Length: 445
Image (cartoon, rainbow, N blue to C red):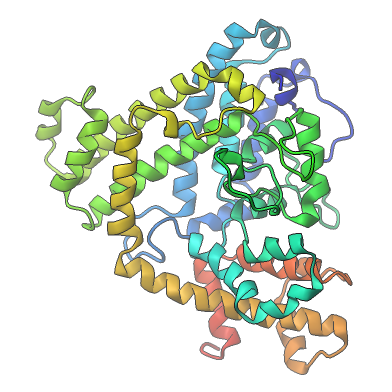
């Protein structure tokens, strides 16, 4: 892969390239990506979607929105620092008008939208959609779908759903949010289809990045960017290099900030947490300053800032040291999996799993989320299919009056009809999903 092609300013829906040199210096092309995401309704719904604690009764805990904004800040720093060095190593990029801010803007934009496809109720929302089609009433559709279409449903993936949201055309709107190909490429952490599902040592095979009805859009992006094909027997590519920085920004934030949430909520004892955090920041911490801070939140914030700074330095160094293998697609792990603090990071994640993600408050609300999502899917999928089959009941008609018109596009393709409903439910906020469920089950009028 080569950087000039990877930094494509062409926007999804364009018919020709856009040269960097012609861009308005007051509002750079990649900055527009960030702006469009921030003003999108899909991004706005993240303010009421779970990050760690579903429907928390405190105003401190992070939502998907605050998490995404923080990831974008870290991502911008990673991109700028990497970009500054890359421009020195590839002077032709400077001649074409690229700056280190371009790298920062691409990574920031891809980072701020990295969770835009996540359903309500956190990662349990993805599993709930998958379970409905794997073991729930949705199993009845298996024999009417291709293996890849069915795999998309039983292994519903927020990353693939995010790509759909960003690129999906609707009546009067071509190319979704019309983002640059470079930003879309950096967003694609897992540039492959759902099957074959063959886990390997390479990070790109951990999940998948697009649904079957978005295949053409995906191929358009990766081919324009010159991303390397990983397999000749299925649709699978190596990552856009900047996707590693997007992943690192997310890894840094959820590792450290979820841990911080756990401490401030009292799920993890501060003294116990300090024992683990100090291993990350031992070379940068000012012990006197730490002990001078009177409030727990201030002490935890100080440690968090130091830890993020340490991990940013690590991620930048690892990326630059492995640029050649990253461009060739042979760099198999995430950046933080190669850093010298890997053991400390894993210790922190393990504590977060035990003390936060498996806490009673989280599990109780995830269980409720499973039931809510299954019921919503069943009511809407049934109503839409009955309309197409000519077996529509009066109840089905009433239900479809609640379904926005953009999710009722007439099609004789069962997979596309089901995906319309999955897309609708996945874009709901936690609270909206609960309200809709109450209305459909007669518990609220």
